Amino acid sequence: QVQLVQSGSELKQPGASVKVSCKASGYSFTSNGIIWARQAPGQGLEWMGWINTDTGNPTYAQGFTGRFVFSLDTPVSTAYLQISSLKAEDTAVYYCARKVWGVYYFDYWGQGTLVTVSS
Amino acid sequence: EIVLTQSPGTLSLSPGEGATLSCRASQSVSSSFLGWYQQKPGQAPRLLIYGASSRATGIPDRFSGSGSGTDFTLTISRLEPEDFAVYYCQQYGSSPYTFGQGTKLEIK
Image (cartoon, rainbow over all chains, first blue to last red; front, side, top):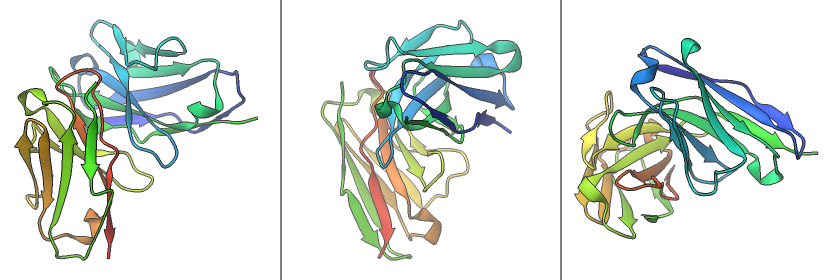
């Protein structure tokens, strides 16, 4: 069965970096893109962008350029989200999800990773 | 950017009743590329509906979606206790692929 398993919660100081992993299983990793979404405490969902798992090409939504980097380790079917120069407002749950081929809705989601930025 | 506005913000109903949730887009959503997700506290979103009206795998038939253009509806007939959650619509017709702010369906 399709599963996306994310790494555990992180507590980071302002200015630090964090790398969240998303390990896929149960399907051919390069057949479906991986998207990233953010959910700030008590808020709704925000699409951050996606990475083409076949080409490695990332696409970032406005507001998620510069400090946010999507990457892959294809041999281990894992996608990564790295955030640098962390700010308090980056505190959120970050989700990865599988993008359905050819369209941009998301049929399987990771369990989410809470990133807390606090001194 | 297409802005999705969901209403009502909170809907209080009893198990067994029917629910109607609305999602209005600031401009037409091409090809009815509109999805609905359910999110329970502490859990990831779950895909319910895609293409405005197609149920995702394993979704009970008490969930149905309808609409086109700028107005979309999620209908839940005969609410079960496990249906009380937050529901989000999402358009994927044009980038950025935006979500609505959510409707909380709570037990009355």
